[in-house]
Amino acid sequence: MNAQDVSDELQALFSAAIEATYLTRNIDGIEGCVDVLNRLKSASLSVSDIQRFSKSIFRLETLRTHKSPKISEVSQSLFDSWLSTLYGQGRRDQSLKPKKKKTETLLAKTERDIKDGGSKVTTKTLLPPPRRVAACKNPNSTGETEEMVELFEAAKKAADVANAKGILSGKADALRCVEAISLLVKMNVTPKPNEPRRMLERLQGLTKHKDRTICNAASALLQLWRQRIREDETKAASTIDMILHKPHQGRQIRGQGFKREPTKTRKLVM
Image (tube, rainbow, N blue to C red; front, side, top):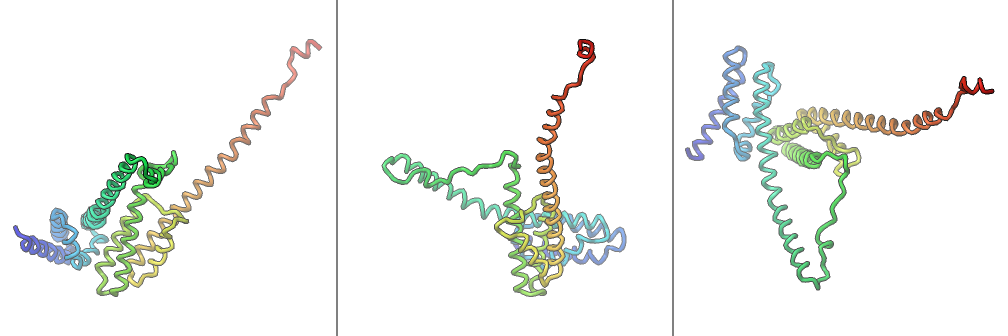
């Protein structure tokens, strides 16, 4: 099967899926819609396929909130797989390879300078000192934070493009922005209030976007992040308060140990 045949088959699948959205008033229509959505998911669309059929994908976006739980569940799984392809594989393939090459070049240059001996350039000038990591820090938190930043930047970029194109022409970009924000909602990571990228402030700007779907998604994420920040601050304050009160209680207990009551034996001797 050549590329044209694959494209025609995908176009037929999307046309069938869009048509099935209007036939979901009975059980047979629901089952037919679910079947087409599952076939779309098993097609394993590439990044270029998703971009080529972005208008059709946007028309299927309403199925995620369909009144039928079966349709909404299958469509949400389908959109998650597309988002994983867009913001996962393609992003990592483009970002990791150049970094690895740069690291190998840097290490090779360092080894040559060490062998030369007489050069003024040393290992310390080429390689930065290792950063200290807190003992209580979750080793997976760094990777999750990087993924959160990349997703947010992708959402912000898509929102800017949608804003530049306008409401009608920028629907596909608005969809990408909303999907990236939905993935951020699912992540158990929250930006710090004073972090340098000003993610909370920039997210608040998205709540005033002229596209209503972006406004609603950004507002929901902003509310969730603020709630998590308040919970973290309350937990930290409670921990500090508990630590401050522990030594005070300990001194009271130790002080009580020095009190001696007259015993019956002492009264008898006197």
